Image (cartoon, rainbow, N blue to C red; front, side):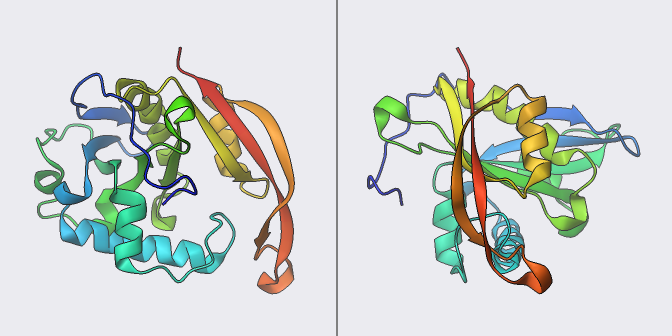
Length: 216
């Protein structure tokens, strides 16, 4: 929950649709499914919970120290609007639901990643998202295409802009994505995170970048 307590999302412009983005490898596409926690198959949340728990244990990208409970993860990532990306052949039919898209597939191969869209601040300044790509899917431009979908979905949900206020400077892949998608680096927070980025995983303080993009 935010430091401001429960925050209402802006008024959506309508239901979100399923989208498809070609990947630059192996004739594959990333198909994005908008869902809420209640709509997500249990095995999907369980798998992404495992990925997120390992990300927290790595201690290099998210501010939480962990461990996080399954309930805590579900509230954090699936408490509002969540977009889940499925990797499939570009020639494969796009299914109507996330559950149908995963039938007969191995989650580790098919789940490209996910992100949430929810308010970061109260109504006069509400815009934020958080992204998660499993290590097995990295290097395939999935994060970039999830970002592209975010630029389409977030305005449809009524957001006028987006701010990521804690992109650690060691996370070069994330910063490169936001640079490529036209975000501005509007600020920097010195020593913003105590991360496991030192020799042999020791902790050290790392600066963070604040990035912003207007949707209007």
